[in-house]
Length: 512
Image (tube, rainbow, N blue to C red; front, side, top):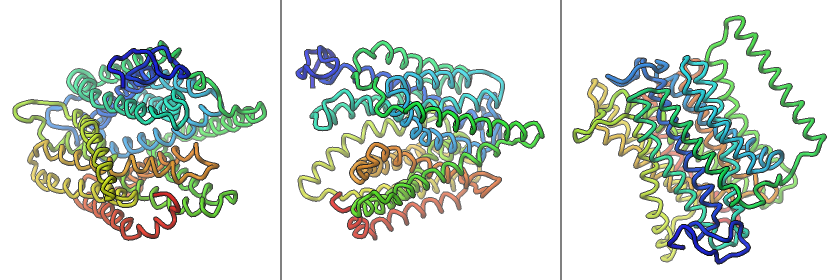
């Protein structure tokens, strides 16, 4: 890699070839900055989300600032889970719009404006109406951006065999975690200590910086990013527009009637969204599995992939509670000082990106080192390790839960331990899941399968939303029985994957 940020390129046929960014096309700097600031805005808002919902209510920490929505832990968990589920669910239509309507570059610009508008709406006072409107805009914009910006990184290189490609994605990945790390420290502090709405406003400023970086650096991007790969024909566009308008009209009329008659409650929105978050992933997998155009080998791989998908949904169901159930425990039942230093509880959300940045290079080195000794665990074993570890994190969670039962504020180091174990589990499962998705994807669905992988997150978060909703299951996910049950479920799932590893391996064919 080049030691300077700008240097003559060794690949004159690469977009932006006159200068490089750390030995890569200059467009990588544009996308790095865009993604870093988008993640800064996204994770900053997410760090405030749980504590803002709890503020003023029974689950808020002692002495915490008022002015929030005063919701209980169960309702907060439902909202955070549904929000996370929708971000990943909307990545699929976001990818479709990039492929069929706007092209990746235009879609990312529209996404950034949508996200910024969402954060500005969250910054408005006025209670629940602007809050949920802003949350919906941020989710929609994040779905649009998530599906397209990584595609644009790929466009910077000369195909999949470009030796710099993996390194470019690694740099891009570090931008994601850098933004995620600093966001809770900055936005969380301002939001919790000064003003909730000022904190949400800071998230809008972060996205505005990212949008400016994108627009100013757009000349360094590949021309391919402006092309619509498979544009809709005029007839298709009209048909999709008609369908979309019909659904919008139907939803408007239905919810208008519910609202006018005085029957509307939060669950009229939350329950349908959580059900959709389960039906869509199941429907997508079923549609691919039943496709008669797939060869016998591809059918076998899809059967094997369903094992990984279900296991991943269990993993994300527990992992994403780090921003809801675990965060709520840290807000209401953990001390807010360590070694005499006071800190806002939103800072807990900086732990995961910090651990990822510290541990990801270590894991990469260990896997390579074990591979040279012919001892690297298989994909299936890594998956089972990730599941067992996420279960261990909740077994570990049982200790501070018991300590806090009598009202004692536990040490924040217990939460540090939970997030650390979860991150180790994530590094065993998440990169492997991305890799196995690309390897097992049928040729016909090669570009869609990454969206299918994201749907595992949607399914996991939707299950959390259904379980914690008082109108459905009403499970207290912050209670000892539920935490133990989830921990045992993950550990058993990991053990089952390991026990059936030979069966799954036979279904995977030539994929190892």
